[in-house]
Image 1: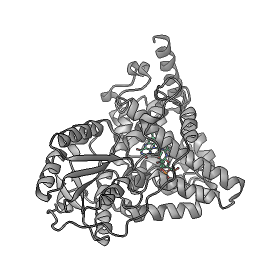
Image 2 (image 1 turned 45 degrees about the vertical axis):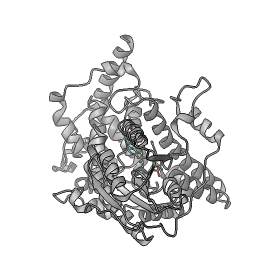
Image 3 (image 1 turned 180 degrees about the horizontal axis):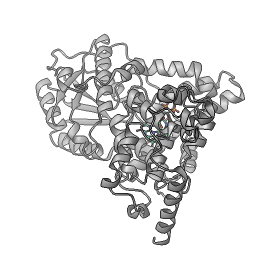
Amino acid sequence: MQPVLLWLRRDLRLADNPALTRALDTGQPVIPVYLHAPEEEAPWFPGAASRWWLHHSLNALSCALTAAGSRLILRQGGSLECLLQLLDETGAGQVIWNRTYEPALIQRDRRIKAALKDRGVRVESCNSALLFEPWTVSNKSGEPYRVFTPFWKACCAKGLPDDVATLPESITAPAHWPVSDDLKQWALLPRISWDQGLAQRWQPGEAGAHHALERFLAHGVLTYKTGRDLPGQPGTSRLSPHLHFGEIGPRQLIRACQRLQQQGIGTEGSTSVAAFIREIGWREFAFHLLFHFPQTPEHPLDQRFEHFPWRKPEDYADDLAAWQHGLTGIPLVDAGMRELWHTGWMHNRVRMITASLLVKNLGIPWQEGARWFWDTLVDADLASNTLGWQWTAGCGADAAPYFRVFNPVLQGERFDGQGAYIRHWVPELEHLPDRYLHAPWTAPASLIPPAYPRPRVDLGASRKTALAAWEQLKEHS
Ligand code: FAD
């Protein structure tokens, strides 16, 4: 029988994988393939933390496929060339995949689809990553949404999909397997081993995603509404890298939440579950915006900000390096940047605070921060990262108004009152009394730990400078 090629991309899972379901429905043998072609993602080549995750996720997927009587075939090179080669080697007549939504990958997939169809190959694509395709949600004038609340209302009005395809027991193998690359030869793992922190924190792969979900359902989701704001506590799901690589999908999360809601979980539980579902909505919104405004990873959606008077690279290089390495002298910011460096992840509230300091207090363009996050986050995601940075910088859709400048001292006092988060990531401050912890420069000189830097920026003065620049921009646009 003629086999079917199942081209796996950001859908590294077997359960609720519509392309896999379609491939199985053909009744033909299935050849799962993963193609490594980072240059096709230019200019957003996967960062170092993403490559680390990908290596382990592919390993996990390969094991899961082997357990189901199948294999994962790995090939490196241009995707079209690899697919044509595989079609030739295996005699397959059909390719099935789940869609991706980054601008460069959309273009690539269109090209590949057309080229394969020209050669008489059947091609089918499905949706594994989103609740709704970005082109199916629009406002009354048929335009894409630019504000989250009406966007999410429109999504909810359609009914959130929770239909989930079950895990296949087995996958029919072809009579002959094509050869596969050795994953190790792709050199996705770092040459210098800086990844111990990542390895301790994460379990990449579908099983890891389900463990994270189970943990969150048992210990986090019912108090999510308040717990999600406290960086020192494990109050959020930590599913973001699993979602990015498609080890779990949003429909599965909706289904899990709806099951909980049917169990009588009380008012706090119920509002917390709803708040979590709304965050899945923010992820959808990020994809919606990236699809409709594909220029936004590099350019502000609000075009006035193209002329914002950012500092020049030669003037901000030292401040940028201090921010990247958690040495700004502002404790909550340094804690976040160090958490990112060690674990490949940072709490959402702290992402907003560190981003706000970079853009508004240090006057550094948001694109610099987005690039750093891109390289260091295990959940680096073009849609969500772009939304997060533009939101914080005040130049995106439904953005925080530019004049909202996060004050890291007040934020620390409010959300890390006992200082557990800061003391964990900034051990130089471990013994500083609580009342000075969020602003060590206010402590008597004898108490300030000499190993900790003085603040690189005056929070009050830099805030005023940022607001003055914004006023000028408004006047001239
Ligand atoms: P939970 O609170 O458990 O939320 C569940 C899921 O909802 C998340 O896994 C995520 O998929 C989605 N979600 C939650 N908040 C947001 C949000 N604000 N925007 C979009 N989706 C959201 N998220 C990424 O996945 N990748 C990124 O590269 C990324 N970069 C960001 C950069 C900045 C400057 C900011 C402010 C936010 C960024 N976020 C990014 C959004 C958010 O910080 C993370 O999704 C969240 O911290 C992940 O942790 P969690 O899985 O425990 O989230």
